[in-house]
Amino acid sequence: MVRDVILGIDFGTSCTSAGALVGDRVELVQEAGDSVVPSVIYIPDRGPMEVGRRAQAKQITDPAGVVRSVKRVLGVAPDSPLVRRYASGVAFPVETHGDKIMLKMRSGLVVPEQLAAAVIARVRELGEQRFGGQIKKAVLAMSAAAPDGYRAAIIRACRLAHLDVLEVVAEPIAGALALGIHAENVERRVIVCDFGGGTFDVSAVVQQGMKFTSVATFGDPYLGGDDFDEAIAEGVAGVIVRTAGYDIHKDSVKWSELVFRCESAKRQLSSVERVVLAMREAFVRKARANDLELTLDRPWIETLFRPLLDRTSAVIDEVLRRAGWAYNQVDKAALIGGTSMIPAFRSLVAGKFGPSKIMMDSQADVAVAIGATLLTSRFLQQPRNVPMYTSAY
Image 1 (cartoon, one colour):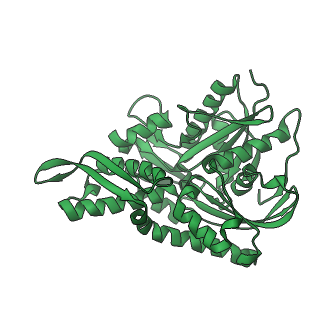
Image 2 (tube, rainbow, N blue to C red):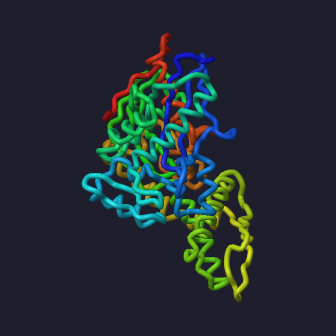
Image 3 (tube, one colour):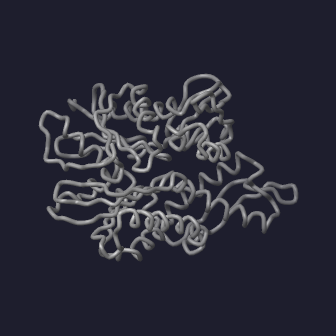
């Protein structure tokens, strides 16, 4: 049994990851052999919620009972435009009751903190299975551009999941630590691009040896991997309309399945040039159901991504403006988050700063959790040499 386990948690819009220090190693929580747990909750008419991959599978068969991307409204004021935008893209009503946002599911009303707590509790349970014994404490990573109420809301969610939050660290700082940026005793300026499933956050950070100071942050709360999935799905939907005259948006179940399959295709296209997207009975033509089989290649999907990539460029430009830095004054550009794996995004950042300045590794999707886990050593019986950081938290 591993004792004194403290989880380092990255609660993400589309996926959540967590880890613990075992000796000198970071060991990540696993679900079905994967180190990320989908931040997806299925709420049936009766019975307990399902979380993670089981819930994700219900997106195809019962999308009205599935809640995704709840992080986008966690801690958000009810009158925020973000609430209206979230409500326009889900299959259930979103209501406001006083100062609370509530999701009206078939089984009743739920608040975002309950759903975030369900995901965090699932990660805690998986951690207890992996490491043995109860886990009661965590270090939590938080978006650098989160709304004002987010910090209190995510801490409440952790308490509902029976976890005490020992420390809150900015996600870009945690992700940069996972890349080993603190291993070099240097003074430099670093841009950290944190590109997750739902948000794109950028921080300008000054490194002075083991000390990190965040000097500027900016982000887009509606720009992430989910939006790239939908961009591909919209492109495919356009092909179906042109070739068969059928609008797949009219069938919410088929549309959910298409988005789900496009997410898988997007991941594959990060490492190969083309994939075949196949979907049974995807559309109707001449009163008959037809299967879809369409080859997607990287150049075509990159044309679909162009408006989203233009928005990422604008966010990076704004952070540089706020920091008062020129592009040639940046020493390193650290890329973290699963969406950073998109080749067109990496090319965009390399074009701004130069390819030699890019820092990234194959675990970009869990970098924030790894960094948060490294920082749990502050609270263990034998603390290790860990960096100091200064941020808004």
